[in-house]
Amino acid sequence: MTRQSDRDANHALRARFDDVVSQYQRLRTGLDDLQERLATLAVTAESPDGLVGATVGPRGQLIDLKLDRDIYRHGDQDELARTILRTVERAVAKTTDQVQEMVGEYLPADSGAARFLRDGEFGSLLGRQDQLMREAADDDGR
Image (cartoon, rainbow, N blue to C red; front, side, top):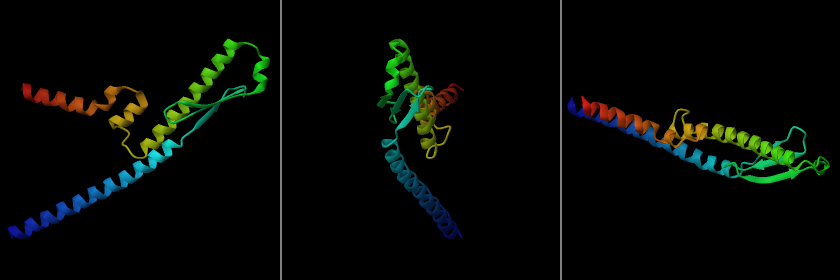
């Protein structure tokens, strides 16, 4: 009887292991796809007056800036600078949303990496580990 239960337990463990490996392989393939999608991501925003267009890459880096020739008729360089900055900021915000959405397809929303993408706080990356360390310290103090 013990041998049969050992075989049953081993079979169940093997099935679980195969399932975990399969999930990992799907995730790994998905992350390769995500990396390719991120590498080609370019998001454009336009100023409300349509005179400025800014395109940014996946890390929010400015990769293209288009200025309509009518922009030079306004003559206020400070206003032009503010318009360019606000347009780039909108493009970056749109990019951040798209990157979060893409990553969300592969990572749980409550994971440290997903939280880091939302808030930019390095503490988010280690939040779960910090919690475990606090719990371990509390257990040691009992």
